[in-house]
Amino acid sequence: MKLTAVGTMAFDSIETPFGKSERIIGGAATYIGLAASYFTDSASLVSVVGEDFPEEFMQNLRGRSLNLDGVEQRKGEKSFFWAGKYHIDMNSRDTLDTQLNVLADFKPVVPEHSTSSEFLMLGNLTPAVQMSVIEQMTERPKLIVMDTMNFWMEVAMDELKQTIGKVDVLSINDEEARLLTDEYSLVKAARKILKMGPSYLIIKKGEHGALLFHENEVFFAPALPLEDVFDPTGAGDTFAGGFIGYLASLSDVSFEGMKQAVIYGSAMASFCVEKFGTERLMNLSRPEIEKRAQRFIDLTQVEITFA
Amino acid sequence: MKLTAVGTMAFDSIETPFGKSERIIGGAATYIGLAASYFTDSASLVSVVGEDFPEEFMQNLRGRSLNLDGVEQRKGEKSFFWAGKYHIDMNSRDTLDTQLNVLADFKPVVPEHSTSSEFLMLGNLTPAVQMSVIEQMTERPKLIVMDTMNFWMEVAMDELKQTIGKVDVLSINDEEARLLTDEYSLVKAARKILKMGPSYLIIKKGEHGALLFHENEVFFAPALPLEDVFDPTGAGDTFAGGFIGYLASLSDVSFEGMKQAVIYGSAMASFCVEKFGTERLMNLSRPEIEKRAQRFIDLTQVEITFA
Image 1 (tube, rainbow over the protein chains, first blue to last red):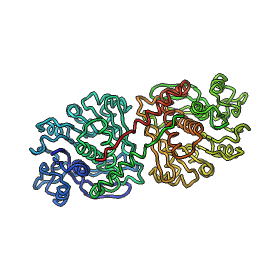
Image 2: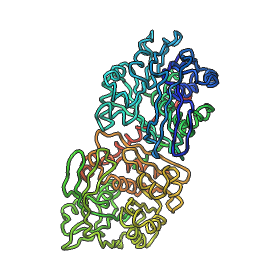
Image 3: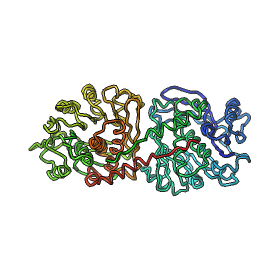
Image 4: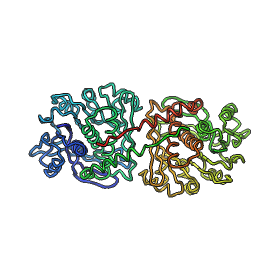
């Protein structure tokens, strides 16, 4: 497998100012896999689900050439469940309920056909669990991308920093970058994080776009001004899936390649937020994605006439 | 005069997380004039100051080819004074003190040599006062740009909308766009505002860049990721001054011209916030400005390899 992604597969109950959605399918690996599947047909997911996880959905994923050999299904147990409510600005949310269920003692096992993947995506999980996946790789992947969240900075900072030290790209949001470094300025935060191990840092700013830092360079991908952000759940994972999926298809891990990948990740995320859950990601076409990516490019296009 | 700008000239006391500055020179017309002076030598300011406003500073402005015939200096009276304190995010601030002084009954008089200016900048003032300036123009300017603030939306919405109805470009921040339209989505807010009269709308998002809306088109100028935003006072006025100054130098009021002008306005604002008050704007060079504008362009530059 060219690309392997580890993360949750879950049920989400989501409330936004636009409505409610009860127990729909979510989870980092789900969003990552869906987004990546538009760019590569050699991807496998590593995750865990309960008996309650619908076989029909698994079949749908397999139909997208996603290999699910690494998805453990536990009889008599329940899938991870998360319930949350978004505020009007869609950047802040309250967690209403978290039921770890099968996730409580999740020990991901990377199938043999995936232990030499060139591209490894670590979806948000306990940093030690993410580390255990890196350790199962028989060859150092060409590119390891890691997502994480503020929670681990509060309860497992040391472990988190150890895992961060092993990856090439860290993808977090602005609040998390500040929390990780104690720096308000994102430029200063980026400088500190690039000293922790990763050679690339992506700072996601939701409706305000995303920044890509590398050595002394910086690239900015705007967010598309949308009529409505319907449901931001999974946008970060979808970004990550589009990002690493595009890079896997390009087989390029240069700064120039990453810049393009940030645009494709942003394009995928912009689709994701248009409907509840994974709905909008289920029926995209490649021309639709190219057109959306082009809109991101056009948004900042300007020719300067030096006066 | 090619360009005429009306606005306050004032003293500001500013507190930011980086320090304090007592009674330094500020005011919308000051920032607009300074920024515009790097692009045109045919600009005049219309404002009012008290006896306490330093002649030395007025001389400095005149030395930049800014015509001050329209700046009334009132004997025995004090200049407008504002004191404010910024929070760590620099996007929110508390007003600690406002002393209107000469501003209380400010009736701007546009000097004859400026009543046929092609470019008119209305700095933030009572909407009725802004309107009185439009009415003094003997020819309809080629371009009227208007700045305003949330305060007028709360206390003088009807007057405000009348003035907005007379201008070509409205320049406000995201919070103000939402307040003006009761729409959270900036795309929806923009659509409503473009029906109020202006054919162009600029939504400034501070550290998150600026959006330019026109008919069904949208352009996004990023903000430069800075080490530190030292003092955001005057950034919006500096943006406006750079924007209209550049357009006046170009004599172009097309969407393409406006896009470039948004970049130059953003570049000027990025200098402004690097030091307290007007300090950083006093000694710039044109090559320095071009170089900064180029950094804004480079920040979003990417070539897509369609896979």
